[in-house]
Amino acid sequence: MNETLKTLLERRSVRGYKEDLVPAEVLDQILEAGEYAPSGMGKQGTLMVVTQNPELVKKLSAMNAAVMGTTSDPFYGAPTVIIVFADSEQETYVENGSLVMGNLMNAAHSLGVDSCWIHRAREVFDSPEGKELKAQWGVPEAYVGVGHCVLGYRSAEYPQAKARKEGFVIRV
Ligand SMILES: Cc1cc2nc3c(=O)[nH]c(=O)nc-3n(C[C@H](O)[C@H](O)[C@H](O)COP(=O)(O)O)c2cc1C
Image (cartoon, rainbow, N blue to C red):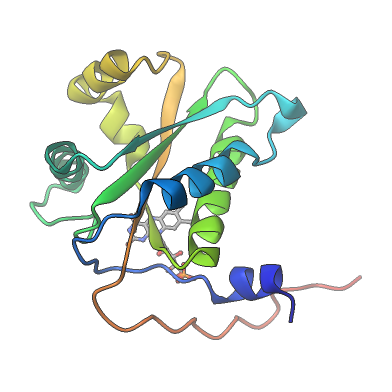
């Protein structure tokens, strides 16, 4: 099997991380893969905010938990977070942002970095505190949160893929 297909088939969502940071040169490659995701009409209506600042990661995790009404750590201890935003004024914004997320997770896996899509970015960055962070970071108001890609190195066994469901493909 070629390396690209191997990456696509073997990437799994990891839900437990060590404290080790993804090195800058590896993180740069993951971010570049995000930049090259397809976008509706090639408008590149997405952007990524990346942090390895422990205080900020903690704050983002707490904001995410608050959306669910819990105090758990929805980031599973991951020390690196990329938040993907997409321009809601573009018709394909959800698709644009989702493809960036996909590129990030697959690129990460190809480089030996574990990842997980953490949801609720929309709600987090629609909150007054989230809007304040967006303004502070220079994220335009029309850009909405699509997902958080948490990154790092797993603290437990690599998860197994579930069997694929019947009828996934209809050949006509
Ligand atoms: C839109 C979307 C939102 C997700 N949100 C979360 C989340 O908030 N927390 C989480 O642990 N996993 C989340 N996931 C990961 C899925 O649970 C995971 O992809 C699925 O269980 C299949 O596992 P795999 O990624 O290992 O193939 C999300 C995935 C997608 C596509």
